[in-house]
Image (cartoon, rainbow, N blue to C red; front, side, top):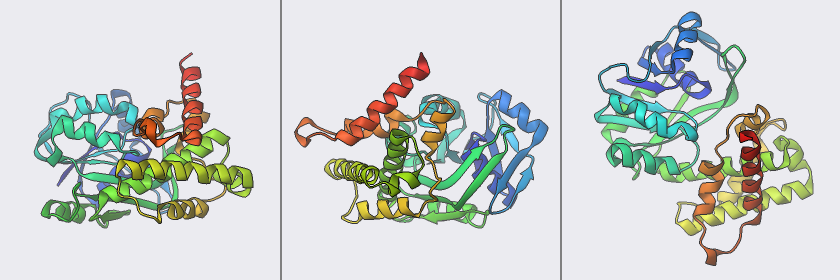
Length: 306
């Protein structure tokens, strides 16, 4: 199976690097400047699961190549429109698109661009970032890819993909209900990123302060209510699982959105929190904590652009 990993950043570089280390046929689609750096240094990963350094095969946008069997997308949502143009050249009739982005809206965009059959459901669980030298720093116990057919069940093609992802130095899970898994993570990541950016603090002080914890719990309740009203596959235990996951994090853990704000980088405001608010109809009432989060992030974006 020929893999194209879109980007060699913190997430794509980690999972793609592990696949290359295993011996899979892996190519990275990167920008010219990133390609020059990687040609000089190779791909460096420092991980609690084991460090590695490897040369990698690369393409830049527009460079010809045969269609790939699987294209893994791990870019930020605000890059997705450009990425869709970049990968069109490398998609054939049977190419599988495996998105690892947070959120939900990107699936509709990819299906519209490339056809419903080509797009799998997917997500990942990992804590990873780039240092100033471009080394990938991976620090979380979990380094998981979860994927599956959008409509559920298991197919021959997802079995084949699992075979190639398996035993690559990370955990690969084939889900029979990927939409449920996507929404569970969406609820977690939008509530965690929302409360940490609203409070400007890691998760520990939020959970340890009764007033802040109450605000967080209200945010989770609002997001779950929106998802349920929309018809998402969420059950009665969703809020409790989300809180339990939050409580399992290291007290100093920050959301990636909070770290991006500290670095004055763009954030996925509209893709995550804004997209949830678009699902709300006037008769469904107000969601004041989520609206406060969204307002805080839009102020940040305005300041970033000024």
